[in-house]
Length: 452
Image (cartoon, rainbow, N blue to C red):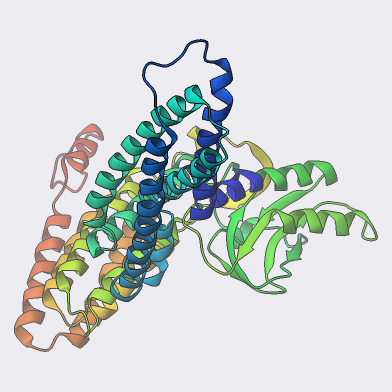
């Protein structure tokens, strides 16, 4: 995704953009009746007076203004509820809710349609055919309002609820993970070990701002690499907090220090979009971190909602299994198209993903046996998926959670129960799987013979 496409997507998600567009359509609808009457070849049956159409438009204008004001107050209350009961990071997703934006935009557009219709009607610009066309369009607007109201009433029953907001975060995270699985290196050359793969003589390109990397335009970096005959090694991926002198990328190549280097550096910096907040689009780790925050807020003394924390663990299992099942740990390189061979990008590390997903839960739920049991079950299931790095990250996270639980569980009974569960898990993992058995048999060895 180019920088322009990313900016266009962000702008299109704003309420005022959609409201302005539909409001403009409402104005055009009112003017349409004035223009269309010139091209209607026949007289419409019946006579529609200006008072009849004007009364309907007055009702629409007054009611839509009230409904829009009420809906905005409900929307603001929902934002406050999400901020206090879920997490402030999820409010951005609620602000981008398409249903809310479409309904409010319909109300605003209907209001503007009615106002413009009343103004033009009072000037006497509509003839008999124009009033007939305006009446037909008004009936269509009323039908649209009724449908929007019914949809809005149904939507209000869920807006701002913990479960609904968690669904939105999970969906946004799923989309980011799926996009990253399709393109684990964002179209560039893979870097398995950034510390070793970046040449020592590569020169860093430092940031000149403070904030989070929201988007990286790999295509722009590739064009810069082609123009200046460079190899570019991306150092700051989406989600990284940067400040002046933080390397955004490293460049390798011969360029003129006096002229071309400055131009190349500017082009590379322009390819990185930096903002005050993280974005869900290119940053799967942010979605996992927000999910973890929801569980952490639920486990706070003010909320004391272990059910939500357990629900989040189930969602985490779905998301992380998607990453493990999709070989997010770095396998499948032969199947991934490298579109920009001059740009080198590292894949996301499994350890970082597990930290974002489970570290807060392990800390805040350390003293709750029900949370610890579900956490260990989740990690035990994930330890059976993915590549070796994914499995190792799951086991490491389970070990950290166990250490926290042993120090925080208040009574010995809970500690013994947790230990018994982990012993059962270890016993199951120690048993040979059908795949292991078939591998031994194919190698000419019988089970339990030690290969002799």
